Image (cartoon, rainbow over all chains, first blue to last red; front, side):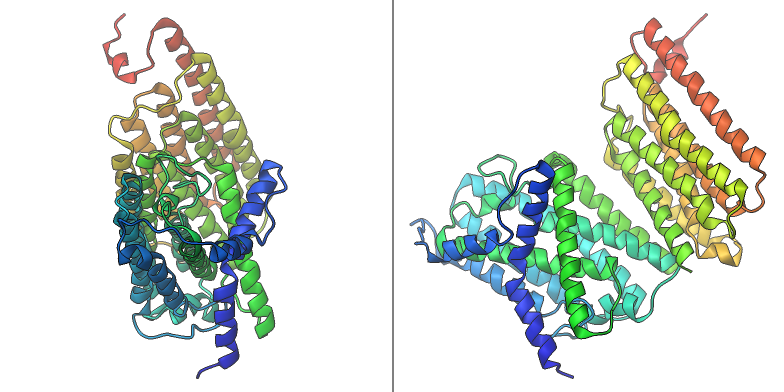
Length: 306
Length: 215
């Protein structure tokens, strides 16, 4: 049952691949803007640099401030063990693991927000408030999306849920339901990772930012850990989405891993394109976007009932 | 059937455009969405018809040219001539109309599943997408104030009827379909002229004030 090579490759990708996605997104944006852009591996260099640096911690903070990024990283890693990559099974799978997946991500967010609040900075408190309130709405969309997948596959675990389109290709109405869920999950991906229509990862010290503002007081290795955890989250949600937009298996393990990596890079390019062609939404429109994506999932659910 | 899956994906796109049109606050984006919907609709007869007939091809080309290019062009021209502000003024807010549209779509799906359809059509989203688009058209007609947004509502309403016509793509006479398109074209042509004139005579394009006109 336990397939050792698959598990090794799974964790190798989980640990090593995520910062590359950030590089691909930035490269795509640079190409759109006619710039050369930072090197593809810039995120790795940044992480290496941050890990070597000294850490400055405010005297007003408590252990929560230090725990925030660490818990965000460990919960993202644990969540990573639950998600099947490409055509392969997840190392850890049991009935109802999708609930654990969603709340591991939520736990990471809770501690990131708590660490931001712990600094006592009004700026960071604002970012935390925004992050948490958008997350409430994104969670609804994510769960209705999961319900549609449960309904389509008849299983309660992420691996069979996400592999159902490969096992038995859908026709007719389920395809439509799957497409709706895929669109909604893409929006959730953008919200969870604070990408462009919701938040601009490039701006700093602006009143409208969400995720970056929560990390303002983190420095050195702690900041590196927080950034790495954020890239892991991007990687995991992209892997989730990939199952819905490219449901196929090629047969040979090497090709399948390659297809998985290529698919993730394609999604990252897609995010880069969205960031290049769209402006950030006004904050008050973000809830409408999330409500709309929840509605899409509900449409998908009704289609599976028909 | 891969073909039907593609048609369903296109129809999902139309549902998404419906929601977008109800949620957007910009007239230009609204026109663009209506145009895109027209193009997607135009591609549909080619995919649904069992064999490629010249009828289907002609309808497709005429639809894409009219709904995708000419009509949006006229609307944009009317927008420029009348110097309309870009913001849409809704009678009820954007999120409530979007929720109403979503409710309408859910009802359409429920209604369509209750209808005795041909077996090859029950796997397709044609009927729910058609009802939902018609309802979106009604919502745009009733909840937006500006004359030009009402024209777009009418256009979307016609799109919904066009989708329903896809059920009969084998049997629908070419003349009827082209006649409908021509009517639509002339209708929008006339309305864009009217908008221009209303704008020249009166200060506002608020359709609520049309009720108080006297001879």
